[in-house]
Length: 220
Length: 355
Image 1 (spheres, each protein chain N blue to C red):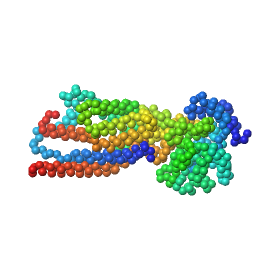
Image 2: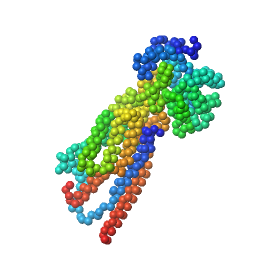
Image 3: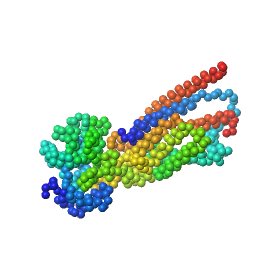
Image 4: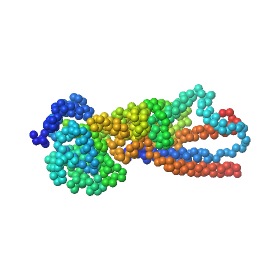
């Protein structure tokens, strides 16, 4: 069995099973946690509206900090958008997506996706370096952050190399493709157990916080 | 002049090939082998002097497609003339002799050229039972071991001889293996393909004739000059791949416009061969040009590497049922963890109240 066959076969199979198992475990575990009983009547109604507002407002930079976090905020949005666009609009990814969804959508020329992936990777590298260089960020950065950053970057690095048919250190195309799939496997396996779970938990958490604040009558 | 002692050039002249035709052949050979034009006179001079080397061609578990590819590519081709211009002392499909006489001729040729002949093999070697494939009552394994002992080098022609090929496909009922799995002490050149390109076969023979040495090989023992690049790298449909223009089925507008066949399972990106440049049938076409994706026939285990129509970017992920089971297991573990946490916090609160 070649490395590519291993990556596309057993490795991906195990990785996606771990991913689904881990994500459901985390979600069910979080959603079934005990919540304190409400001991006072709600000070304001429209709790759902408060929850939805929090999702929106907490996705924007707070006014008082706006000037100081422009780069962090913009780069965060920038790499997320570029990352997902490169993944979802790259033509050769479509057979992979069709396997799960049963349908596809129009895609971009490969060069555009290559540029998007390069932008995402460049921003991720800058943000990672910033974490290492900035003393405050460094202090609040855990091993989880570093691992999450690296496993997020690996599919980009291997994908760019494979797409460009760049022979890195004499590694041939099929091996680069295998490494690309294996890097996705690493991402899937790490995903449920690290901070990457924010993909599923960020919006519910903001919603929950919004509902609580609304209940207490807090303008936030 | 004794046919056996003719040089290659003399043999070609005897076949009616002009000096101009001979020089054109030398130029083509230099081009195919990626040699500079300045070496064309060297090739010509070497061929003029070169005595026809003895070649023993043994067919094992094979379909004769490799021989057909070489001899019927077009008739008569310069390749086939050159093929006649080596001393092909044993080739079951092409030789007139049969039975005991043929085996005697092979033994005599091997004995006369012991240590000097080029051994060409097509077909895989069954290890499961010696009786699965025999020639004159001798098993393929025994015949290969004996013939390899006296060979200067071995050319494994076709994917069966090079990598086990179709007989080696799962569940491999005959225990088929490649030549390189058995012979370890001789130089082996793999010219893979199902069938291999005729010019790849003649190119290797020419290199052997002209320089007395074998060509530079890749990690799989194939001549780099023919197997150094992927089909995808040299495919005329590559620009469509880069533009994101793909045929979604074999009869849609994309297919009619000649767009990339990646989504229809083309294995061009992972297949190393010269089909896209040399092409087939007098450089008329090759599978992708005919509208079908590359099936990767020059790669090891191509038969077992997923479906021919399965795109390279697909995975074998197990299906929704397995993901459902994984989700159910995750839900059970998550619920158990949450209940355990609830029980813990409940007990702590109770303790806090009583204390």
